[in-house]
Amino acid sequence: MVYNGYRNGYWWWEKPAGTWVLMKEKKLGYAHDYTKKWNWITSGASIPGDWDYMAWVQGENWQDVWNHLYELKNENVEVQAQVPIKSWWNQAWKDKWWY
Image 1 (cartoon, rainbow, N blue to C red):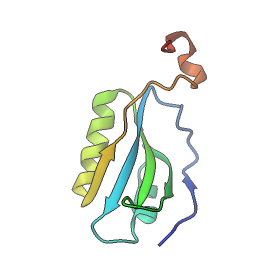
Image 2: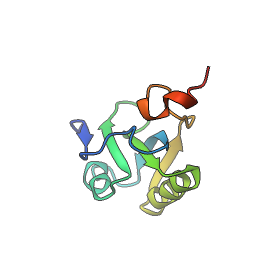
Image 3: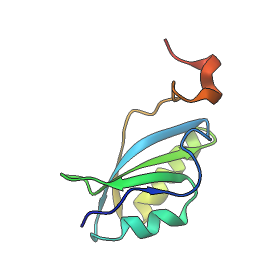
């Protein structure tokens, strides 16, 4: 099943920490619905291939982000976080950009 892209009204750059997360559902067809219940998943989209969904998970700090990943795992979702970054394109972080 393929879903349209999703954004919950927040922007991915509004929090200081975040990571793209690949998700594989144990029961296919629910990611689009349950990801909407959390304001820390700002956007997501269905993707083809080995993974079902890709979403941006954000938090106030890295511990917050990891806690959200555990919440996803508790929903019976396999997750793989991509390299977490302080977004260099995020204007709020412009004095902290990595060179």
